[in-house]
Image 1 (cartoon, helix red, strand yellow):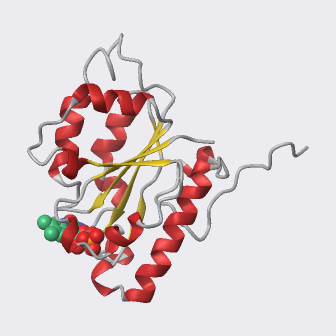
Image 2: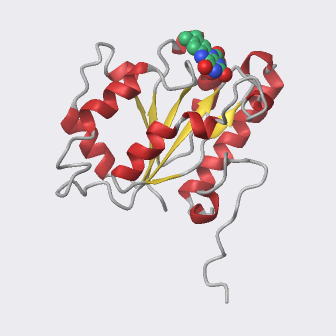
Length: 202
Ligand SMILES: Cc1cc2nc3c(=O)[nH]c(=O)nc-3n(C[C@H](O)[C@H](O)[C@H](O)COP(=O)(O)O)c2cc1C
């Protein structure tokens, strides 16, 4: 079973339609750490965050897409927590072998996040600083899980997205996905997940 840590960052959760619903579907045994609740003044507790990272195998940065990036507290978290000699550098090996990904909601439609689309870049390309930060720390990066077109989602569609999200997290937790097959993809397609070979199969 994979130990999953969700680092959740939404600066206005009271106004959220999508993330608030997603959070109701987090499976048992998955840790949710609400960064804006913990650090409203951006005063990140580095020792606490590093201990949390060490206690988990897979870190999910969950957030709304803000200006093609994360809300600012995630950047603050990175700047403070990923210390030289701990996360990177010749002595900084503590995160090696872990996995990381972004799980985000975006107002823009999927078609807008293509090279020929309105936003010119894919979401994965826009998240390159996070992918490369992970890589520098010896962490394997998975493609983003993106819920697009949030402004147009009606209640049943949000409910469907919450179901897919819950099933995805449960599959990750249960080691039911082939992460190495997932890693090179542009984005996670929750309807078409690469499954791990069944344990004990010949
Ligand atoms: C400050 C701000 C910046 C935003 N930037 C983007 C953006 O760059 N791309 C995009 O697709 N949506 C953008 N949005 C839309 C949000 O991503 C969207 O409202 C959010 O993901 C919806 O999730 P929620 O209902 O949980 O708040 C932005 C919204 C705000 C408030």
